[in-house]
Image (cartoon, rainbow, N blue to C red; front, side, top):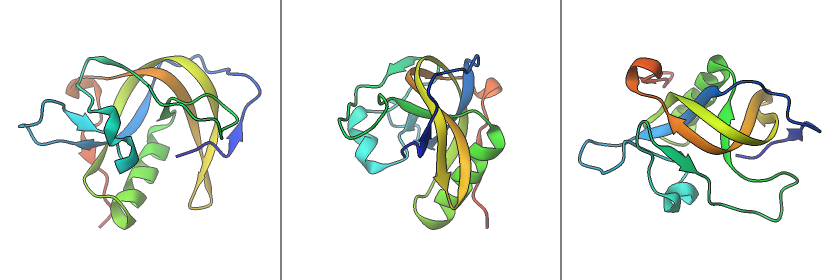
Length: 137
């Protein structure tokens, strides 16, 4: 997932957003995994623990990091379409983030979605998170 437009400066004052992840079965040591297979090498995410993005890229016009939606409705839209067409078993979780390195929009199905790119994130516990599968059937 890449930004299609990048703002000249980061203006977000938010510290919370929404991430699309895969919920893992209980026998895994992590609670969630990244949504795409090329991210799997990063390992999983445990609820309540800070994770630092370790990826880097020279072909992007902005620093790499976790792509986090600022609006719940947009995260659900993205998750629902991915579950329907490409990837299965995705859910939307609420995350806390810090060290924002970019913000902008990414186009998905001709719709611009607002995203921040942060170096660090933490998935919030269930009571503060959105634990629903947003598959459109």
